[in-house]
Image (tube, rainbow, N blue to C red; front, side, top):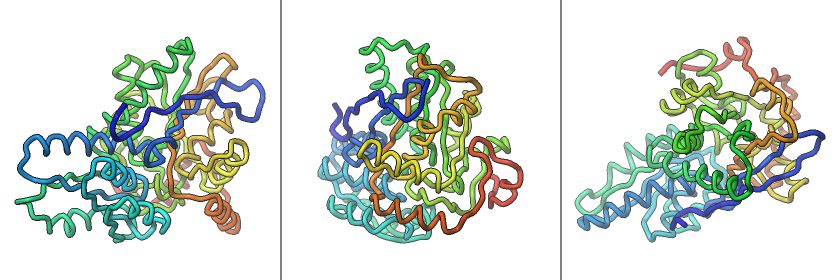
Length: 359
């Protein structure tokens, strides 16, 4: 058991419908910060804090930039390890999340319209004022760091342990569904699958919300791109870019990509709350949407699924939304009444409307 993250259950869950595959959810909402971010970000902070403590010359101070959940994970880990922590979040981050981060004892600075601007302010302004004679900074990127991926990979170790204990053959696992933002979770899952020799045997279905579907657009154009801005309401998931590692792994292992509209994700989150008495934020609801819509999952995988098949859904968690937030957001989205294209591919007319730039 780690100091900074919890071992979480992988449980079979029953969704509405007939002749469905066996759907297992990995409940990352039970992490100290409420999301999977505790694994990777906690691992990065713990490894570096131990290194700095061993040298004994300076004191560690954690500096994180985040849309919300990554910053909360950093702050929660620092609370556990008694480390000072400074988090910069953009103005799009909900006040409730800002207060949750502050309540851990961390310092929170609100600056920038989106994560990238918050990150630039952290590195160029906040961290430039550090007294390097007494303080050694630990910079925490929300997703692009090998130590983060290493932490997230522990999720696969736990999955394998559960499958073995329940005598479920890996041959019956037909896919893993996970939400994709910048790619930290995805990279960790792939690293874990590689470790267990399953990267080419179990396909990953990465789900994004429209407006921050950077991976999907990159795969469609066959080149890594960056959005000038994101328009999705899944602010804790949304980022204008993905890591280079994510793009390369997605191509190497033929990762399937699905894009879901904001309104449908919110509807799924509300269904999930009604059915299971748990609140899921949109970043998590993107993956849950495929558990409610197996037909989309089958189209992404390219084959039908039977009741003997097993699908693993990473319920990645998150702490940025309340039930009222979800209900209010759905009302706002429905008032716009914008027609949307199919969920499992991005037609050319949508790509033309997406503000992108090649990296």
